[in-house]
Length: 481
Ligand SMILES: *[C@@H]1O[C@H](CO)[C@@H](O)[C@H](O)[C@H]1NC(C)=O
Ligand SMILES: *[C@@H]1O[C@H](CO)[C@@H](O)[C@H](O)[C@H]1NC(C)=O
Ligand SMILES: *[C@@H]1O[C@H](CO)[C@@H](O)[C@H](O)[C@H]1NC(C)=O
Ligand SMILES: *[C@@H]1O[C@H](CO)[C@@H](O)[C@H](O)[C@H]1NC(C)=O
Ligand SMILES: *[C@@H]1O[C@H](CO)[C@@H](O)[C@H](O)[C@H]1NC(C)=O
Ligand SMILES: *[C@@H]1O[C@H](CO)[C@@H](O)[C@H](O)[C@H]1NC(C)=O
Ligand SMILES: CC(=O)N[C@H]1CO[C@H](CO)[C@@H](O)[C@@H]1O
Image (cartoon, rainbow, N blue to C red; front, side, top):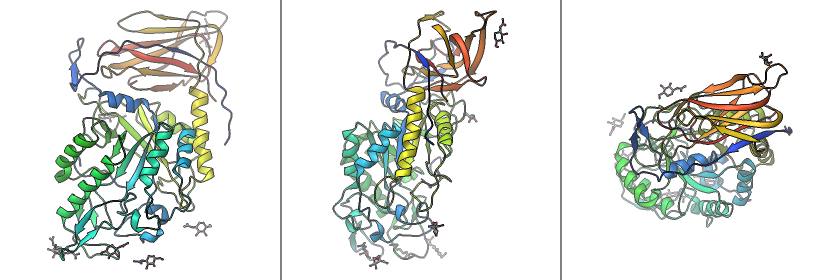
């Protein structure tokens, strides 16, 4: 995912956890088709999500699969005017079920596969034919899988079938703005001397190729969860893409898609795997968003498993450490951002074993730390307008963090909260001590308490500021290592 956003906006550790959990569900209001509503208490606009956006946000973990002809070169994608020889693309052990095993080990709920990256190589069979310039000679889009050693294989189709068997939702990345084979940068045919492998076409031909290929990949592989517009799209293609999306994949979340989709998601603004705190579900800028924006447009945090922002499998690439990836989880999912982790099959078409182990170690940590629950002995909701939730435990427990989830069906309304505990000590066991406070909750907020593990009798969540009656989906506390 090397393309810069431009245009238009132009170890094997053991994790031992105790935790208890308080969870309940409110009766949900039916989703509205209106984009925002007016707060009955403060009069501000509250952005409303679509049901698709909420379902997508609840997935929390996904993968972005960088596998294409760039897997077979040393650079991380094609830069300059380089067009790799098509005979390089030969994943002779290709098995997409193997990819899915790793997705499950990590805990991914959705997967987006690169269909076409900047080199221009299209990993799906395509029927597109077009005229060369200036001769007018009609040729097939022959920089595609059927002209490679993998002729007859449909990687996109295999990927979708493998994911469907395990209920992993699917999507595609197809870069509209770069295509080295066709001499395209920033969505435009470049006026420059062609390099080996490049061919000459007109801008109209290029735009037509893009729309035909988007139609192919959006109509041949079922209902997609997410569509990735890396680098966006040109203004000329905005309207036709909007129409095509509405016609073929209206339910799909469109990454970078504010303007072309009713289900947009935004980029968090960095590929490092860290969201700012606070990070709101609303707003369209590539940062922590804006609580007062009338546009519900949650953020996705895409980042790599390999070190140094490397997306395609690299010959001598090093991997990030498990502890760094755990921090990434806390600073993305724990800050209301989806964690989309790069997944990189190697040149055989399989996930390398040391990579597979690291994805599983990260998944094991998440499941072990946050996956199980022990019910508290008693809970109280004290004040309807403010929401105090108190959890009491029959015997003292040690915990070091809390997880809050807001029900955003009627928009993200909480603006501030505080978490207090009753410490276990001999002299006074009814005193409340603040262990965490914050602003945005949204889909999920994880607070690792700065004071470290606390031995407590009770814990309390107080919503101190909101623009409408807050609804908490769940509030849990945990102890992790
Ligand atoms: C691509 O590589 C193949 C196999 O090595 C070779 O036969 C062919 O000439 C190369 N094509 C170009 C355009 O270099
Ligand atoms: C591409 O074709 C156009 C005519 O459509 C011509 O003006 C241009 O010089 C050609 N570009 C190259 C790099 O050959
Ligand atoms: C694709 O077609 C062009 C134009 O006919 C030709 O020069 C090129 O060698 C073809 N490439 C492959 C891989 O068949
Ligand atoms: C293409 O570049 C050449 C050389 O820089 C220039 O003379 C020509 O006007 C350019 N053509 C277009 C259409 O921009
Ligand atoms: C990978 O590392 C080996 C051993 O250090 C070295 O010989 C080789 O050139 C490196 N390859 C690349 C593509 O960096
Ligand atoms: C209870 O323990 C906490 C933390 O050690 C301390 O701050 C607090 O003062 C103690 N309370 C009393 C009444 O001693
Ligand atoms: C911490 C952070 O990134 N805050 C940003 C939240 O979003 C607003 C509005 O886009 C930005 O101005 C802040 O910088």
